[in-house]
Length: 303
Ligand SMILES: Nc1ncnc2c1ncn2[C@@H]1O[C@H](COP(=O)(O)OP(=O)(O)O)[C@@H](O)[C@H]1O
Ligand SMILES: O=C(O)C1=C[C@@H](OP(=O)(O)O)[C@@H](O)[C@H](O)C1
Image (tube, rainbow, N blue to C red; front, side, top):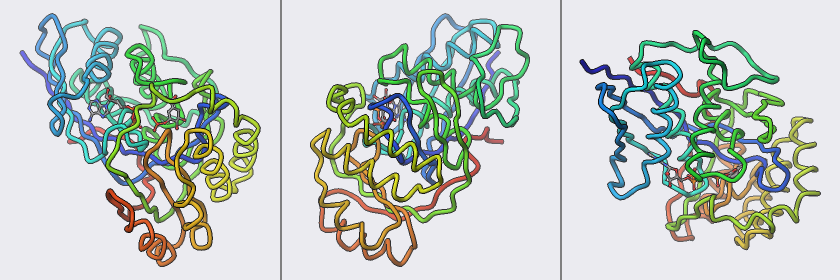
């Protein structure tokens, strides 16, 4: 007998990169990854990325294993992802894929999840937990990311933004949500044609800009998200050797602009007309630019 489940999770952009201090902040954007999980009782889990047959599927396979070990009978199956999110571009393809896979596996097992607001604390739960919260489900994906080496801090900032929607500020050492907010923004994205895997990032250089990361965290707590993003962008472009020209071009127009994650993508937020002006400049660079919106619903199972 086989059981199939499907779920979708959004990508995200960065307010604060967590590689400096372990505290990070991100916001969900309207760009999706969908996972289809089929459980067939076999011995192993296999994986497939629709757009990239050569891609590393260990993250999503481990997500299926962890969910089946905790909520099912430990059997295997197959996971296939279909994604609009460019991989290793700084737009949280890994968090979107992990979240979609965890929820799709729960769906295949017939286990639901609760939307309980959970802002402080939490754990990956116990074997006898009947129903996980969405934050718990995100923590399972974070655990899989740590175990398969695709992350530095676990990236609970990105995982929680993608899972819960809106903006989150998190402590990635404790996998705790410190703040959540609804942010209704237009978002401009520039994705250059390169990749930058987070696991390869220069962590020592990121730690050097910790005083600026503390300032960005303070601004985020106060709700000054635009300025927080721009300070983050300046600090991490300097640390990771990305150009600051996209930020300088955005600053007169956008509410905020930053390198997203460990790059190479940039994101700017603000008024749609102002972002169109920024887009004219970013369009002169190689790669793809597009206008999108923040996303509030987060990850969800598909009927
Ligand atoms: N659609 C997908 N399906 C399966 N795994 C994915 C998918 N997208 C990303 N990943 C995993 O995430 C890794 C990239 O993660 P990372 O370097 O953190 O980039 P990003 O900033 O896009 O999350 C890939 O090597 C792969 O293991
Ligand atoms: O691996 C990690 O711990 C992180 C990777 C970065 O994101 P990307 O994966 O988008 O580069 C960063 O923004 C995040 O705060 C933490």
